[in-house]
Length: 195
Image: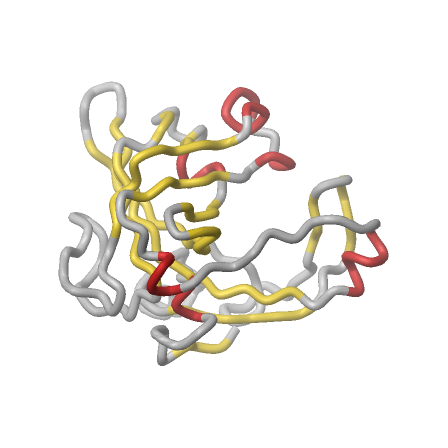
């Protein structure tokens, strides 16, 4: 992974930091962060576990804040920052995931969408949808990923959820008909980290 210092340039600005608020059965708020990508002017693609929490039984997110091209200014996420980001922020209005994720936690269906209240994608642009091909064609394709890792990797302060990192390459295998796998060595800059 390499650090992206100018998040306002294309294509970086089409990637977003997402802050979510969940509420447990006792009414206590819990905040989480994820990464997402703009898929049209008012839709952000993210993981299903970002909009519907199964690990703590919190269920659907109560609120979401989406920051396209987040530059890290304004602090963490509890409470979500309201400072002026290069493209501002938008609030989530609807959350969607696939039934197989919500009902049974099937990782093959860990996909989520957030509809947002402000058409910030008009300012940033968005990525198109592409799907298809057998495993060998998928493994021959170069994939690009930019995200805001927040999961501790063993170096304090490195993955802070504020900085955008980018990596690219090929997947190593197709363990399921709709899922690709990448084999990593587990280091801070060459593994998949939450956030």
